[in-house]
Image (cartoon, one colour):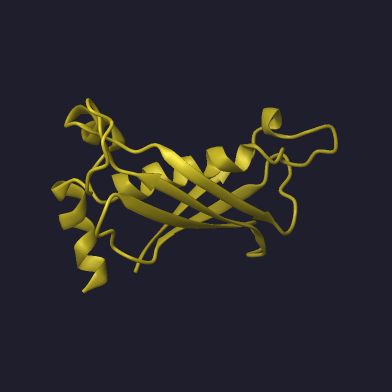
Amino acid sequence: MFEYKTRVRVRYAETDQMNVVYHGVYAQYFEVARVESIRSLGVSYKEMETSGTIMPIVELHCKYLRPAHYDDLLTVKTILKELPTNYKIEFYHEIYNESGKLLTTGKVVLFFLNAITKEKTTMPPTLKDKMAIFFQ
């Protein structure tokens, strides 16, 4: 299993009139955490796209347990439970506040696609090699 933690501070523009993080912002927090988790392995989304693989989101699930507020420092945990064997990758996310309370959970499913043909493909070998060590 692969896990990575990213910290995000809630900005004022991300909150609503009740001083609560707007529900749609959580998809952005998941994205930041997902990109940084891959970067921690020495691979970037930009490199993957340049080398011909794109990763569109095909599913997004979110469960809101407690609110986050302006200026909270959040920890977003990114979890990959299985090493992909085909065109699909599933990231699980957990968001915690500074007190360690679980605020939100989520799951984001992406496909690996050939950037030119838009056909399904497999995980780029560069990323797969880096992730494989977590699943031995």
